[in-house]
Length: 132
Image (cartoon, rainbow, N blue to C red):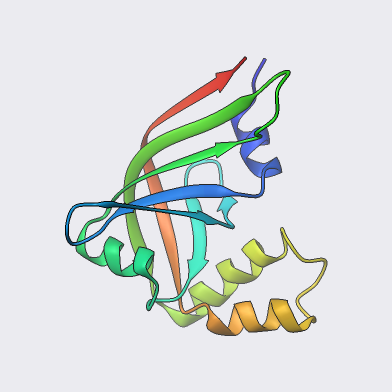
């Protein structure tokens, strides 16, 4: 039996699609965390994905394991918002980064944390799973 929450907590890359001002999709791979109800993605307000969400909060996403036997995945759509409160941003950003780094003492982790000034929070309205 496919366990969505366990799968999402075990995967590392979420593909996030936003809509730009011309109505075109913008698709990017991102690091994320999943709480069981919402996705969180650390970024900077200067990124295209953050700017797109400020203008149009509709998003879609996909997480898959990319291998056969079995191939599993989760995709969905929903609404996104930007969290801008600095203390909340840093708290969530640290949680996300600790999924990818053993600690936050290294140069790369510090640079990513310092550059994160907002969190994209996705509230899914529809989620579909598959396993073949």
